[in-house]
Structure formats: structure tokens, C-alpha cells
Length: 335
Image (cartoon, rainbow, N blue to C red):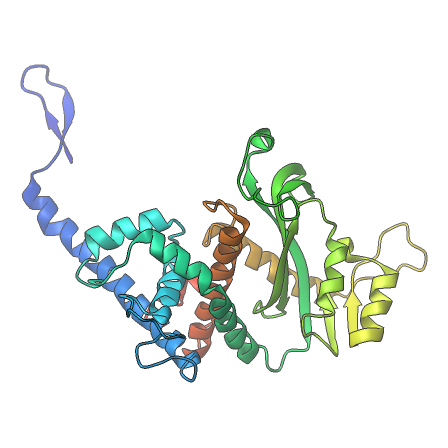
């Protein structure tokens, strides 16, 4: 568009330029993003096939299908991870873009409802992909961080009328308090354990009202042992600290409260390590839109969260292979 003086009034008004300018300048931009998404999909597909090379057939499927599907299992997983890695968390928007702008790159695109069902069925393989790559990146780690972050489902004013994720009472969301935002919210709480470098180790989803300290009971069965676990004051408990050390030799390090007897100063290096998981939470909320929810069931929400973490782990793996800073996630695909 440009400013042009009106002949009658003498005022400057906005005029839109002709279609030839749009064809000359906007089409190359559209083709650039088209090449970027297709190349990213091929990159994640190669990673998926290399990880599961001993578990898939020649078509990229984990099991036998009487009728061969248009998209293989590996392609379904790669497409999910690709969408999350470039900030597309809506399946409706993703398939609209694929049908309109990327039809040549995806000629055998399946229906969106079929894609949604298959990604839920393939959730264990998505988890395996995430865990295998994360274990490879965490081979020499002996210090980990634990923390939690709110996952709201709806606004607090709609908590009574919302039907999202309420198919079962045991897994239904409830009301909790966020100490960071100093406000109540309605939804779930995501518990996460990462290495001091920010690489995923394990996670769990609980109701919003569940206290952080109860997740330490699950940490004992997460595969951690003979290591240091750094946490905040929400995980301060002498009984849990003793239990973790006696059972799996996990040394829990938390800052002490001001009114405690024999208070010891929290090591500065532990404070610096804790910033890593806080930065990761900021990346989850900003780049991966953790708190924007389109799921209607607890299974759908869990698969979405798992796919987001798998995308993060794959981006960290790409940075590691290219000798880039591990947690520069936005620049991992800039090659």
C-alpha cells in the first residue's frame, strides 16, 4: 500500500498497490516457507527412522496394516514433531496450510480425524523417541532439576461450566494456586525433571491442587539414582529427603526457610542451575505455547504435551550434532 493525494479533497489516503506487485514480492516469501517446512519434515523423519530402524518395516510402519496407509507411522510422528517445532499447535490450522500451500509436498495427506486418532495410538512411540534421544544426551549427567508449572484448561470464571477433560473424575482438572503468578487457575500441574543442561528426563501430569512434594514419590521410580536433585522450597521435606537417599541414593538439595533452625545457605551454583529449568519453562510458554490448549480429553492433552517435549529434545539433539548451543531452540533449524 502507499499514500496518494486525493484530487478532490487534497487529503492523503491509502491506496493498495496492484496485483502484479503482490505476485512479484509475496510469492517468493510463500515459497521460502514452503521449502522450510518440507525440509524440516524430512529432517525429523530421518531422525525418527534412524531411532526406530530396528523396529519398523520397509514402509516405515511399526505393525502390519492389511491396507497400507497413505502416511506411515514414522511420517505421522515426524509431522507431529515438525508442527510443534515451528509453533503450529492447531491441527485444523496445520491441515489447512498443508492442503492449500503444501499440496505438492504432501500428495498423500490423510484426513485430519484419522491423523488425530493415529497420533494418539502412536503416543508410546513418541515417548520412546523422546526418551531414547534424551538418554543419549544425558549419558554423563549426575545432577538434575525438578520443578512444576501450571497448565490451565480454561479461565477461572468458567471452571464450573467447562467440560474439557472431564470424562473421568480421577483425571478431571481442578482448581489450584500458582505462586509465580500469585493467582488461582483451573487445570493441571506439570511436573518435570531435567538435567542441569535442560535435557528432558521424566515428567508427570497431576491435578492443580496436588502439592509438588508428592511428585517425589514418583521420582524414585523414574530411573534416577546416585545423583543430585535440585529443587525449590516447595519440595522441602526431611522425610522425603531421607527416603530418596536411602532408597535410590538421590541427594535432594533445597533452600531452607528463614525460620528454620540451623539454617544453611543454599549453594550459589545450585541457584544458577535452577535457572535452567525456569528458562525452559519460559521457552515452553513462549515458543511452544504450553498454556494454549485445544485438547478436549486428558489423552489428547497428554499427547500434545508429550509431542512438545519430543520436539524440544529433537531440537536439542540437532544443536548437539551441529555443535551449536544446546538450548538455542529457535536457531536449531536455521541451517
